[in-house]
Length: 80
Image (cartoon, rainbow, N blue to C red):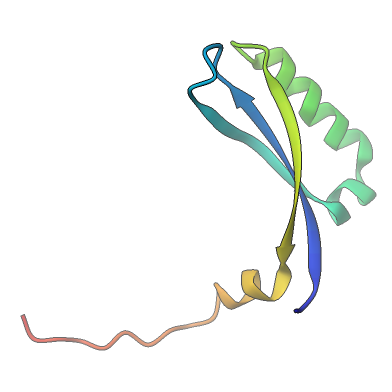
């Protein structure tokens, strides 16, 4: 399955609940190295929020897939 990394996503939602958007994201190693920075990011999101609806959602990510996204790919030219 590969190396799994926890990602903490800070989301804000609109008052009506019809939309939510990503405000910030931190991986578990960044939080371990700078827990105060993560706390500040959450507080900043709360302070800057227009709706006041901030949630932190944790998800798991396959780290090898992230690295694979940076591997060069070959694109075949086609005649138009």
